[in-house]
Image (cartoon, rainbow, N blue to C red; front, top):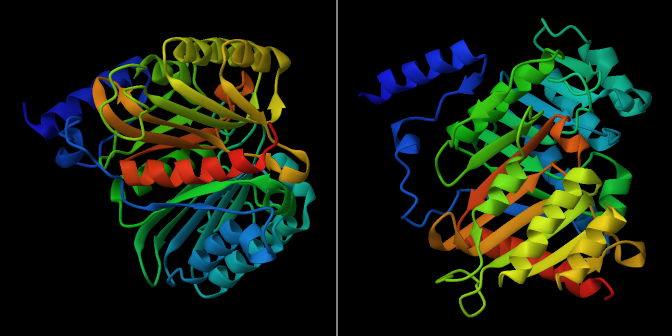
Length: 383
């Protein structure tokens, strides 16, 4: 069966089942060989809340600069939970004045802040117009939760096409100065870009919708979105980890390395995931966790009793706001796997009902960048 016929059959089956399907980026993406080491294009960036102002605001300044480079006629789409950053609002308004289409989707609580109020006055709220600000009630694509996804896409800049940025950050002073954040940026990857644009367009509707299935766009990338009507994508991911037999990556003497930096990990779902991570430690994985301020006591107790290395961030060392996991070693049958998952999705009950986006990236080089970022926070956090 041809790729085109297969895609058509898949779309038909999805339509009959009420499932919205995003097509793969193309034949190369569909045939991606998991046995061949893949390094995702793009790069990871971090802020430093303990550094000088330029390092604290490094991610904000990076995004602002890309918006300032957007070409006239290009489209900027920004999804945020908390948006109160004057510099980004000014960058978006400058882009609008030079002919860039500017579209925002933010959670309704951000309407109280001057940056969103200013953008609404200029761009308007009519989603049938080219530019607009959409305030979502609860999650944009569900009937509960909040709009918590955090990503930016730009169709064309002076230096790149199809730019996509996914991370853990809010557009606030608190996020820059008081929290550890990360941002993954990739340009020229039409598959990732198109997926995020389609997610954004569905969020703009601000109405309950069927589940959204995303196929791998290639380059080692995978995209997961919430709301999730059934099952748990994180638990499915953890089920693919094998603790012994690692033959590459940063594995310790054949043991798979698992690292988690999580702002919020609590509730009944959090406890299920904690028990799974504890079981991986007991099965021989090398596991460390950076705990944010949203950790539940039962989650912490479950991890610590199993011997998982846990450090609680916060206070003078600042708190992690990341929603990061990476695996180096034996994963999904690959004994030399290197994958990282980042984005907006906390390990909580609520996150399955929120609008959330998680991007999986692949490759030892990318995981090494996350490892260094994790290690720095680990070493700065008291035991």
